[in-house]
Image (cartoon, rainbow, N blue to C red):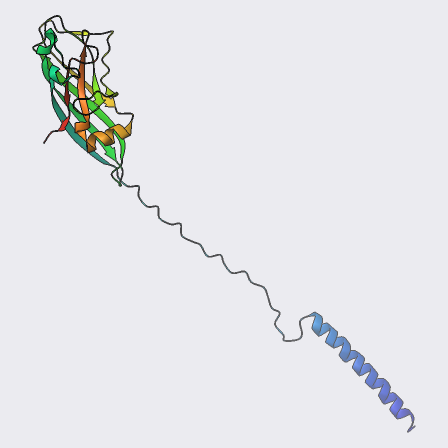
Length: 206
């Protein structure tokens, strides 16, 4: 009887250890008794605020007026026949749009000229702004739209002419005219003098 007691105890201990081991496995599978199971959480996304758009710079507009006296003596060469009696005046109104850096981004012009004291046989065919200093001839830079196909007959010896909303397509010309009006001249051409009958260098009206 005394030899069997240890065997019985050993068997009981084995079963106790088996139960304890099984309980340990179950506890591990379930996260352990009283042990909280960690739950992964996702942080709410941070909403970034869209940057406020800067307002576009407001363009600047400016109007400049240039004038000149028109004379046959200013032509190169000077007029020496009956049409040398022609005289007149011209006004060029230049409207420009400029960006914040004062660069011209658009330009329009208005041409107004008056011619008088011409022979009654004079026919005007063209008029425009040329680029060139006094005493020199230069190329046409801004045209009035007059054509030789529709001449203006000076049956009374004179006339007036106005053309508005002329687009200055070459903005460098507008820039140069503003910077140095004396480097440009207004020229009116006649049928007898297709290269010009009266002209004058432009100057800024003050």
